Image (cartoon, rainbow, N blue to C red; front, side):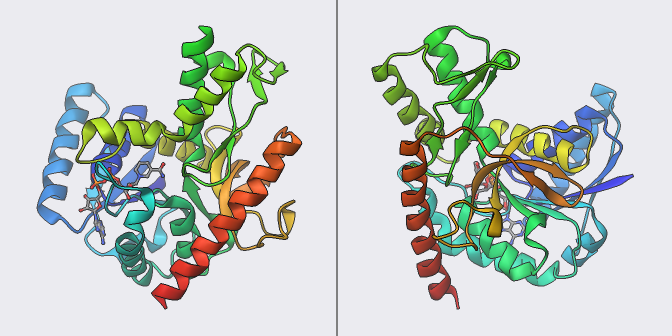
Length: 314
Ligand SMILES: NC(=O)c1ccc[n+]([C@@H]2O[C@H](COP(=O)([O-])OP(=O)(O)OC[C@H]3O[C@@H](n4cnc5c(N)ncnc54)[C@H](O)[C@@H]3O)[C@@H](O)[C@H]2O)c1
């Protein structure tokens, strides 16, 4: 039986645990949170939901972080979410300290880490540095969510069903993300979003980039969690090799990067195949020259942000 650890059982972590239970995959789910009372309450609630839903699962509280060392995969959602008026970067210092404390306790972990905590590209790179696991075993969740947001925008403009679409969003999980013009529509057909006007393309980019922000604006005291939890579940299914799909995650490209003049150390959204060893293969999406140029530019900014942040942490 596979072992899935969830560190941070707030909105995303608890929703993810519920999805995993409902899926009936053969796995033990271990939950950890600093808020012990809330964690106990959520465990009881999840257990009761399982009985009612007929998917009685294997779920328990993990009291000490070092017990996660034997797990296959860890999903880390511990940290503060954005509230109305905040940018993801505003969470940087506080969430980095939380990840630092967690990394100290799970230092012998050998499996795959999925980082959700924002700002996710910086946190994924930082966690990979702290844990000294092979860099392919640490990845961030973001692209799967951004691509769903993009698909929904295209649906609202064209009426096409989202299931027939394959969108791709590369780069950082921020207002600088790059929704690619090449979209898969139906089996084997790639189009350059020819179905929508130039005006609509601009709107598509804007709405995809601010998809998270518009939810925060309405929720006010927190950020999206059903979508992020569903995206984590897709990643889990692929890491556990129950599915094989191209998923965009925040990953380390190293020498494979066509953008390595910026930095080989950088983590950013890119389509990949995943497996039990983490990132198995990078996929090169269809990008036009403008998009490649834009990506170089935003990766330069991301690298600068990381170095400034890193200097402030050490
Ligand atoms: N990557 C993405 O696409 C994406 C999308 C949405 C939200 N997020 C981020 O995910 C994170 C979690 O969001 P949420 O809505 O679930 O927040 P939440 O506040 O509901 O849950 C966070 C949980 O982390 C716990 N926590 C705090 N410090 C901890 C520690 N040291 N060890 C263990 N647990 C700790 C809290 O007690 C809380 O239960 C936030 O940083 C948010 O910005 C990322």
